[in-house]
Amino acid sequence: MLVYQVAIRLVLAVLVGGLIGYEREFKNRPAGFRTHILVCLGAAITSMIQLYSIQETTNMILQHPELQSAMKVDIGRLGAQVITGVGFLGAGTIIHDKGSIKGLTTAASIWTVACIGLAIGLGYYTLTILSAICVFIVLVFLKTFENKLFKNTNVLKLEIQYVNKKDMVEKLEKYFDSVSIKVKNIEFVIDDEEDENETSKYSTTMYTILAPRYIKSSGIVQKLCAFEEIYKAEIM
Image (cartoon, rainbow, N blue to C red):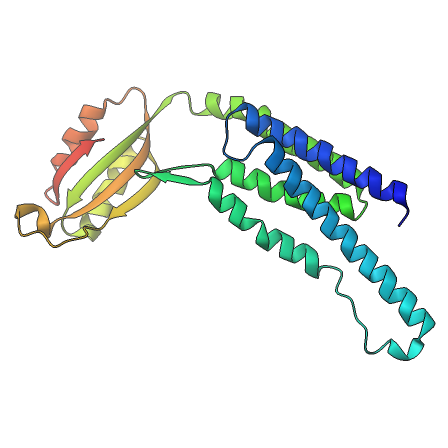
């Protein structure tokens, strides 16, 4: 691999990582401009290391044919380790707070940038450019589409205390379907200590729901409290 080829790939990795990272930085996300550049750059370097090792192994085998059966190079091994290893960065951007999860998009963008970096290092320029454009469109323009898609719904967090989980879930799903309520997230609450009060016999679950705007939250609570399996329901 010639010096100018290495330079082009490194510069392209900085540009692509910077483009995607700038969008994340602009929105004040945990992993922004420099993080995305470094991930893309590191992945590209890893790919080029793999190419160098293949080239050196090939040259050595050509010089010493008897080593052909002893020397083997797996072209995808280092790349696979990059994809696996970048997961710890993504995990660090995910924030779990009171049943809500934030940072999944940033985690996904870091993982995708690593994949693009591998493509850059291997010299797949067309794939790199088209992938970068697609990622940028998803992050910038599809956010507006997503907001319009869900503009007629309210996100509500509902805490339910209940008994007889099976019957309660069946009634709850039937009610949600009847009024076009969609469940976005379910979190089961486990008490750290055994309580001896009246509520200790009840299980607690947190539901994050998408409810049509014409449905009042008080009406949802009133309907759920009418179920004999539900001891308490309230909007958090």
